[in-house]
Image (cartoon, rainbow, N blue to C red):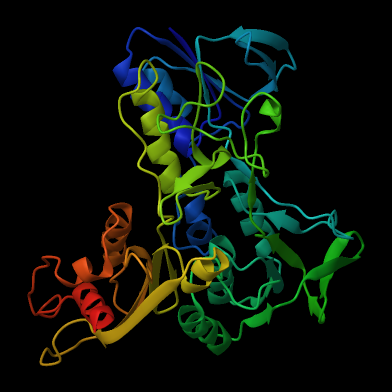
Length: 443
């Protein structure tokens, strides 16, 4: 069996390593256009901010490691064309410019995503950068050394994390987003308000509800960013607007969502025979709604890549879908979320109920304790839990992983009230915070 893999970041690495273990007689070849693999892009802000000193720790595999398990690692190779019906690829060696044909028995598509780059006047000026891979990280670090005024465009996870990283390094930072709140896709207002206040307390300029209209420059370099509401000095701009699937190679050959995300079934099979896909190039089944949607997360990618390997010869393990569970730390705030927010549920046309509880994380008779806020969103008629968000100065984010399991298993808010959780004064209260949410909703 000849297995060919296109792309080798989270999903690709997981698929390759597991396929090599499961099918030791198979011939596995991976084509990657970069000269490195498996970079943890979620660590970009930590690297840029200087918290991670050695970037080697952000790589969890290498071409050498894959070669050691018998995989042919073809780095700096770009797949130019794909004829899926004939099981043929056209590949270019980017070092020699040589082009050749490759055939496969099984194809694994893990081509990932690429940052959205809007067509805005001045977008081609120097010092307007992307934040996706290892090369981007190094360029950002190098350019930031001389920068004083840094503008981040996009208040998602990467954007907000970079804001804090730059502010802690003494930069003047402006965060621009067309939405009127940061992290609006992931959190409701009662959770973003404290985070925004933390940014304001650290002299970060928040330009929310504003859309960039042009980039202004001097001597070929960016000098200011103009929005629908004002202008902001900038000698470095980082675009963090979002990502799109990198799937142009397969247009017209695979079923996709409107944005190009490849649709796969519960065994990671695409609409083409013997072609599998995983990771940021794919749509995922979003359990709170039951719909296929685009949620590019490293956790999804690793799971899907592992499932590709297990289902490559025959259907073995089904994909359980995702809740889009995620977390972030903004200064003293530890925040995590899973499933639908209240705002997201209303946009989806779902009639919901919500419950928010604020309590101490452990008994008040203890020498120290922290305040924690938990919000749970549930469908009003069925009472099935659809989402949850948590925030505290203490790290209680793992509670959201528990809520993710609740959503995946379609538990009701009443059932949450009586789930068996341990009690120990060092850690929590007799009624766990999750129980308390269920009890409060029942009342």
